Length: 94
Figure 1 (cartoon, rainbow, N blue to C red):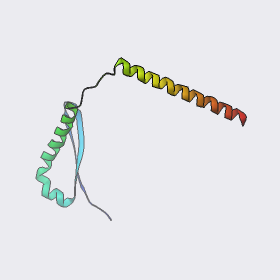
Figure 2 (tube, rainbow, N blue to C red; figure 1 turned 180 degrees about the vertical axis):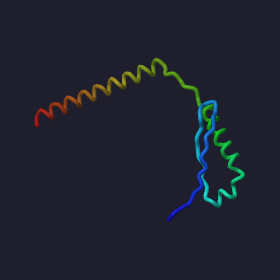
Figure 3 (cartoon, rainbow, N blue to C red; figure 1 turned 90 degrees about the vertical axis):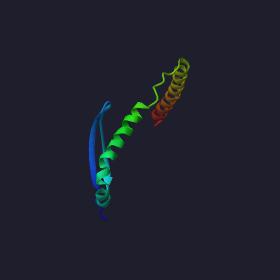
Figure 4 (cartoon, one colour; figure 1 turned 45 degrees about the horizontal axis):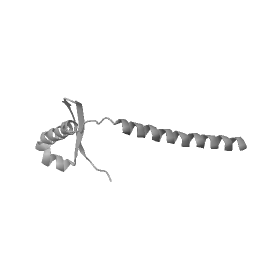
C-alpha cells in the first residue's frame, strides 16, 4: 500500500546554530492546516532553543568520584589482563 505524505522541510538560524526539522502531513491534513505551518515551525524552533537554554549545567566530578572511577578502571584492567593471560595459555595448548 502506497502512502502519500507532504513533507515541509525547514531550517532556521538560532543563537545556537542552524535548526533543521520537518513536518509531515497527509495531503488532506496539509490542506486543512496550511495556515498553521508557520506557527508549527516557530513552536519547534522555540522548543529547540528552550531545551538548550534550560539544560542543566555541567557538573565537574569531585576528587572522590574521580578516584572511585580510577579504582574501578584499575580493577577492570586486572580482570582483562587475567583473561588475556588465560587466552594466551589456551592458545598455546592448541
